[in-house]
Length: 80
Length: 383
Image (cartoon, rainbow over all chains, first blue to last red; front, side, top):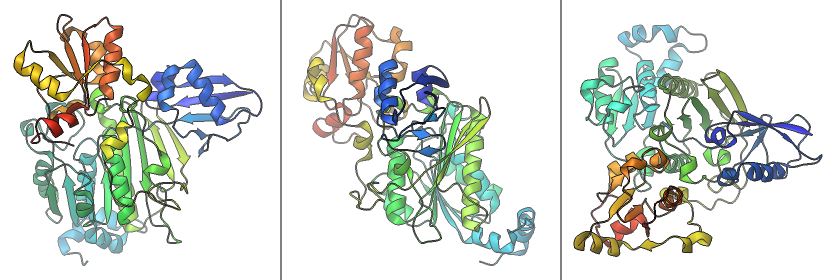
């Protein structure tokens, strides 16, 4: 199934863009997304503890994804 | 708190707003608001909250106005460069609205003073510029039961939310730790000086915080409590994400483990990575002291952020971690390089970068500037 990863802040640097499409097996979880991101973008390891949002909700790592879900990566930003 | 005749005129355009009225204005006049940081976010908050008639405003900032601030901190002027920001803000804002009372704290907010300072206020605005302070202010607000107006900016993007707001059922809304339970390593959280920041964005996000603060105080509308607003000014998109209270939140969850303020700098630096420890040749602070006295003097490279360097330093050359690759010409190849940060984590990242660039003679200063303060110079300011 296809999902879209949308990045904010420093995560844009890591995936080298605002979004990236990912193809996952049926029944894949948020944890699988993190594993694939680390495989494709080793720097993502530093953000692996980040809570991800699916569509508009923060979810836990065992959340099971559905076709066309939007996974949002929002690292903290500190500037003020 | 009754309004005088001049106040009724001054605030007329908001008093006549639907649902606002003199009642709303009186609530603003009675309110006590603390603004953490008089910078990119703090400055617009100060301006709008003062103009709107908040009765008592506290402002805390240890830093001085710098030329690099003026691109976005429109409260300050060129002739004020070098003056304390909190004090300068007070002088300017008293001219804007003599009805408001100001308290200035020319110091850094720390685990030692935070509870005492924040306790005097009804609501707190986070306009700080670093992650340790953000966790500190969050925890202090949760422990004291104060609503926290959160805003943060990076490059062209902003985040806004309302934390720890009292709900109708008597519970408190989500807070910063529900959003970001664990801080990522410091190099993943670049500051404005590292990553840059779009000037007008600071005004937009700061004004959003001020607007939410006024709504909370006057009891207007629906706030951002339980929602995070993400704003990207570059392509003008907004996105809202729902934040829920996490029962495992260490400060506000079902079984809190944080019941008093902790060492937030240590918390955000994270543990050193033991598995790679052996790969870094190192020198102790006493070793460095001896080397400095006996010569030949090594090149000491301080890879902390410039604001950290400004607080205290041991005389090294300051090139923040994120700038190393673009400033290699400032780092000599023919001298021994001793690299340090605050506690010894970022300096290892710097050594990794320098190794890749062909530097050979590299030593990591064990324990960073914290160890230097503990073992060599106790007068050095720690943060």
